[in-house]
Amino acid sequence: MRQIVLFILLAISFSAKAQEAAVPADIDEAVKKGVASYYHDKFEGRKTATGEIFDNDKFTAASNKLKLGSYVKVTNVSNDEVVYVKINDRMAANNKRLIDLASIAAKKLHFAHKGITKVKVEVVSEEEGRVGILAQNVSKEKAPKNTL
Image (tube, rainbow, N blue to C red; front, side, top):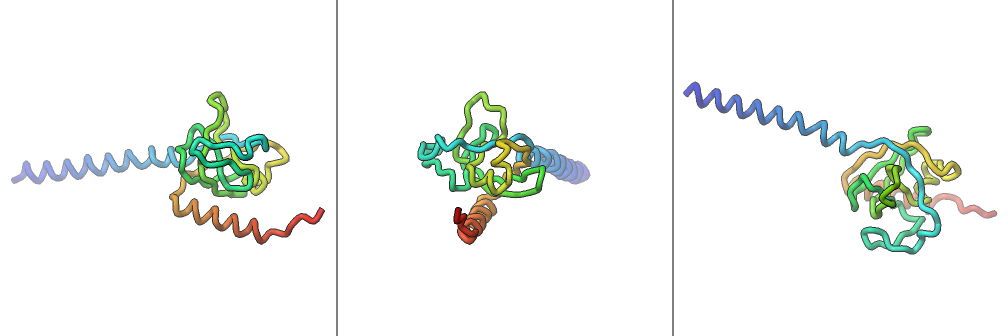
């Protein structure tokens, strides 16, 4: 009887240790820091890696380090501005940057005039990503039009 109880306690202990060990790896994969840039207009209308047509007015991005189809929250570390985007494309294989954003996202993060910025990228759930993008689209539509 003692052996059975001991075995159960050891099994529970190993299970708990395995779960604890898995948490940091998931967190490391979910949060990355690096440099962001944004797409040149010449890519407008071209197919992305997912087959979608690229549009600089949609909240999408390219990355070689993030899974296609994933949603991410991008924070500009210099001003704490945040944008949600969907990863739908890949960058050139030799590109060292973490993420390449559609220009609408770069404008929202206030770095379009600089070309690049340091960012924190967090993988979020599909639901959070879709809601974030929807909210950004609504605020984009309500923004005053430039009359110049």
